[in-house]
Every structure is written in C-alpha cells, then in structure tokens.
Length: 229
Ligand code: SF4
Ligand code: SF4
Image 1 (spheres, rainbow, N blue to C red):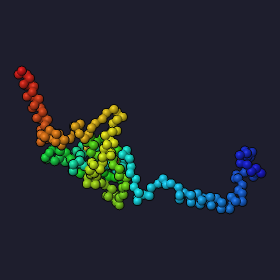
Image 2: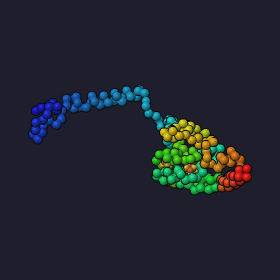
Image 3: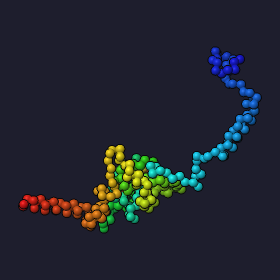
Image 4: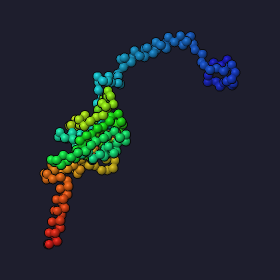
C-alpha cells in the first residue's frame, strides 16, 4: 500500500488506490488543532482592528463617494428647474417630477420631485446630466425604510443646503468633465440656464420670452439705425 499521495497510482480502480493521507494519532483526536484555533482567536483580541463598530462608529466617506442623490438647496430655494433631464437619464426610472412655474420672478421649479430609493442604483447619471448642478450624490449611505411608500423620497426629504454638500460640489468643480478637457462653472457667471440668475444679475424682472422679445426689438432698432447711417 502506498502512503505517499504524490506518487502516481497505477490503477485507481483497484483496492490499492490511496485516496487519503493517513492521519496520525494527534490529528485523529483533533484537540491540538482546536487549541491552535483558540489560540489564534485569542491573539486577535489584542491585534489592531480594521473594522468599525457600526452603527456606533460612522464612516465618513471621501467626496468621490456616491451616496443617495439629493437636491441642492441654494439660498432657501431648490436649484432645480424641472427640466426633466435627470429623469430621462435615470436607467431604472427612479425619478419622477411635476414642473410648475412661479410668477415673480418667472421661474420653472419642480412642484413635485420624487426619487424611489428602492429603484436607485447610485449610478450618478442624474448628477452628470443636470445642467444646474441641482442634483448631486451625497455621502448618505445609511438608508432604512419600513415600507415601500417610505422608500419614495419627496422634495422635502431630498433638499439639502448647499453648505452641507460643499465637499461634493468642490469635487465636481475640480473633476467634472476633466476627461473631455472642458469645464463649466455651473454656479456663477457661466450658468446660462437659469432665468432666476439672469434676473438677479441683470435685474430685468422680465420672463425669458419677454427678454427674447426685447432683444429682438433692440436688434431691430440697432439694425435700422445702422441702415440710416
Ligand atoms: S443615481 Fe442613477 S439610479 Fe439613482 S436617481 Fe440618479 S440616475 Fe437614477
Ligand atoms: S436635471 Fe437638474 S435641473 Fe433638470 S430636473 Fe433634474 S435636477 Fe432638476
């Protein structure tokens, strides 16, 4: 009978076929191995830990982390202009909204904005397509629901002041679209999408349609005065 498993067995169908190594007496009673395991466990009690005692200890993710998507609240108002791009880009159709328009200043805003967090896959597409930097991925990963209805976050639950999202906004400021060699400053002068910002900067008090009409009239006057010269 062969004891060495490394030696090839000539005929595995005969009774001589050696399937297992023979155990020694100590190995057969298992006790030394049990004590070895206990000793290893005991040693680990004094070793440095690599885990956190969640939820007592909370992890603070880096700004690159994509937690639950939130709406940016800027000076007490949502930045969102209810253009619907995020809902269109969202792969699992988690976003739904209803647009409305305020009177003074005339501005589109989402009357209803909901994200179904049971559907959200944290892809960040909504953040990427948003022309207003109005929806961003937060650091919030601690999300619990008690029912399906509870998982549908409405506008009030989604709105977060921009000061609390500073790290993510700064991250977007530094890295967004860098791969294409482009950069848009969404917040300040390059924000060409928001009528609210135009009103604030130009102080016209006119709606976008009125402003375009005014622009046309101004152009016509300019053209005719050039003609008369
Ligand atoms: S992170 Fe992705 S899945 Fe979630 S709401 Fe935004 S686009 Fe939809
Ligand atoms: S893409 Fe931005 S501005 Fe447009 S609806 Fe979504 S959050 Fe609002």
